[in-house]
Amino acid sequence: MADDVNRVASLITDNAEITMLINNAGVGATAPLLQSDANAMSAMIALNVEALVRLTHAAVPGFVARGRGTIINIASIVAITPERLNGVYGGSKAFVLAFSQSLRQELEGSNVHVQVVLPGATATDFWDAAGLPVAYLPEEIVMPAGALVDAALLGLSRKEFVTIPSLHDVTQWDVYEAARQAMAGNLSTNKPAARYLAG
Image (cartoon, rainbow, N blue to C red):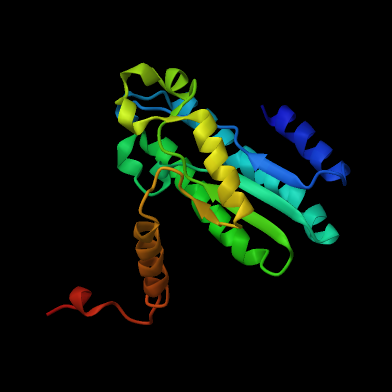
């Protein structure tokens, strides 16, 4: 896979006409860690994390130099609810979200837009590959792929950073993100919190 990724990275670097990168390649798993194959987990990290970083790194310098570009990273709702599926998969998607958050800040003012999409269960062959056919999932939690794409593109047209197509009450995300931002300034101090000091 590394050779394929490097070949695509070279194409991105060498082609100034490319103005959008969609990091959508990925695999998942539903089995618990103790029932998972170590090599399969490593391959998942290589595709979900390493390939995404490599291709983004190939695209960003040209986008910045030309003063325009779009990067769309496909994460998952398990980025913020990793208990739902295999922990390595959840961890890989949490990385995609965190990487996108950092990248967005790094590229502020460059006219390069970053969007991270957090799909819920979607009617694709992902589930068969992950070991749980989509037919076994409750119909009310599975979004048709076309509806997901339409929602993500609408979010992109609105310049959203985080797009969660299946989250109907967006204020829930706003509260979550506000709490994270409020905590950020209190996470590094020169002494332990009072609850960790000997009595």
